[in-house]
Image (cartoon, rainbow, N blue to C red; front, side):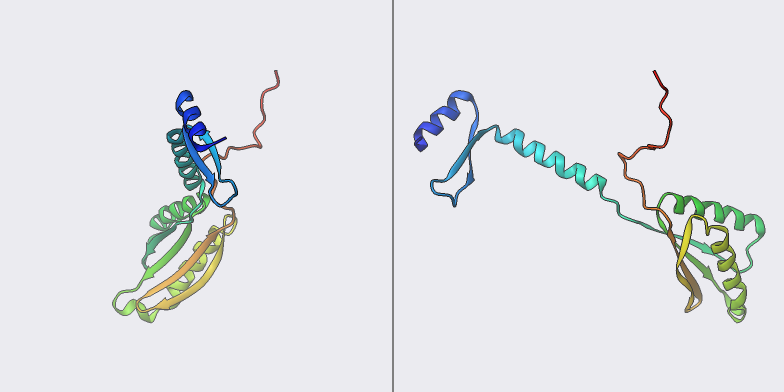
Length: 158
């Protein structure tokens, strides 16, 4: 089929003549709706981007003299972040003479790590950087994708 015949056929059917393999002898062409093809390719690309699981890093800042209730509140947030599949960076901020008692901050971080050990593991042990002590927790399970559902749920039998 000649190029002119192919162009005529495409025009009759209301489609576009698209060159698929220009290096082939003879070049290979297809009849398709090119606008629809581009739209579907863009849609597939968007869906693939949406399914991509990027682990985010959440940060929780604490002080060495934190009260028990405040600790429980922060613990709840940290646990929620980890269950959602996000990494958590715990930062203890020391001010003034608090820096002399680093063991209090380290004990606080170890206590929090112990509380969440069922959903997280310690990626980086407590380390003093300037006036801040930092520890990073990694979630045990991966972050669920948007389209993922709970397959363990029992479906009612008809």
